[in-house]
Length: 172
Image (cartoon, rainbow, N blue to C red; front, top):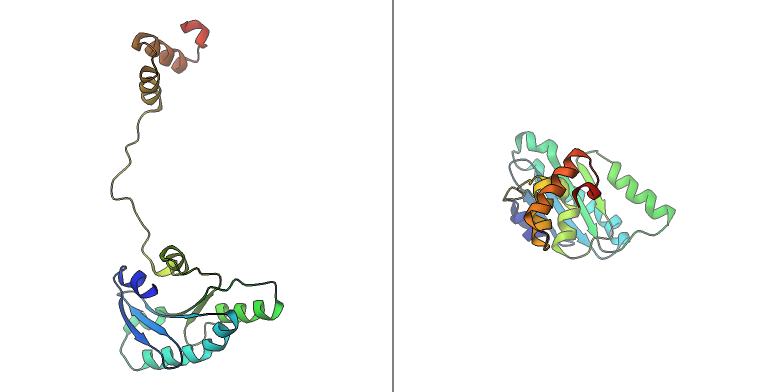
């Protein structure tokens, strides 16, 4: 799923990882390594191994300025509980910027929407393909009145009265 989400965003994606499943994705702006674990504990245990793997990888190739935009993203479906030790460990992962930046996400469902949300910093925002026509509210009100069995003349008088701040009693 992660592979598909990133591929659809123009990333070149390849599998990597000896001890667990990890992918590395690269586009013109970022290098992103993503690993998904079953539990938060496995996520925490995998972080140093994944970090070493991606750090070796980025040292072996010429990335130019992208070297500073390399991320390790760790995902798990398990939702974080109110456990102080787990919270501290996740905080430490998310705020340790030595070697490269890390993002740990918990509670990520295995759906394209959830994965896109977790990878939002690397996903181009969705923009509407068609512009929504902005209609005048009074024109819309007139159309609604006419389509609702109000005579066109009465509907026009009601809209004019509304524009002028008059009461509907003045129209009727």
